[in-house]
Length: 331
Ligand code: HEM
Image (cartoon, rainbow, N blue to C red; front, side):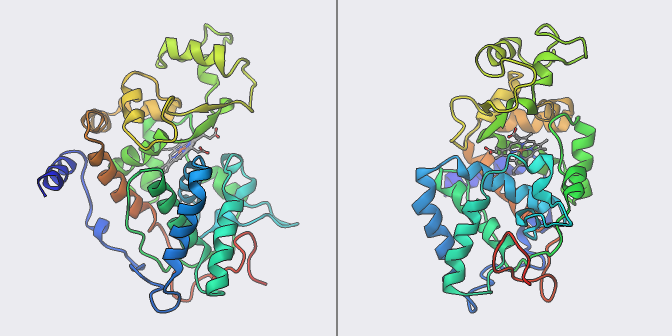
């Protein structure tokens, strides 16, 4: 009890929470209790069975859920394939490195076997992301359900609305605020970069061509020079490398921990958008206070922001549809 009280007090000290945190909005806890009582259990069981064999999938599922929610709300639009006449969100550069689509399709297929046409792909993705993070020892958050699937997915919208790794603090905050999120959400959700991988071309401009002069001496001065040199030597050996991958939190990229925030404070955040969190006094104060631990404080703050992320612009009731296959709209 004392530990829990400490966490709550600490969490209240870093960042603010909104009343929406405890409110599922148009969604509700246990939405499928009558229509598909085992739905959530099936997703959790699938994650428990499969994620231990492929733990890096947790990162991509979390990122996919984020990218879904930032374009047309959390409506599974990121999961749709392009068609002859239309390039979809999936075809957009920010989504090119998402790797969990087949995984989501398989979970959905198992849920469909139990209850055909009942559980949305948007909900399957939200639950799968949450449960995968749980399997790798990360935080737990509530996932109120009842999201319906959208029928529209446009490449350009993903390009315009998903924040990019070269963004500065002002643009990042504006991006989050345009979706109804706030500064604390930006700080805590960025903590997701404590897991997962990035491709060299997401940040190589910081290593080689920061001012446009080019060459190894033209590195971003805000990136730790030892780290930059190491990345150039051992990972991103040329400015044009777009295939090599780098652990975003080196040494613990499969573990949800405080490594991201501690790295930031040593100027070892991989993207300019990571380092940008130190450029704002309030965001920096949040980073500093959470970095010293315990990790449970970060977990609680992250969980709260995940609930808010998962509620963005959801479709409910008679809106959208319940897709049978996540990659295609129902005919
Ligand atoms: C704040 C703005 C953000 C920017 C600019 C950003 C950008 C990026 C980029 C460029 C990558 C690497 C892609 C690659 O090279 O393969 C990445 C990876 C990742 N991002 Fe973010 N991101 C942001 C916020 C978030 C949020 C809010 C989440 C989740 C809550 C998230 C979760 C992840 C995860 C887990 C990965 C690793 C993916 C993997 O292992 O495949 N990011 N992000």
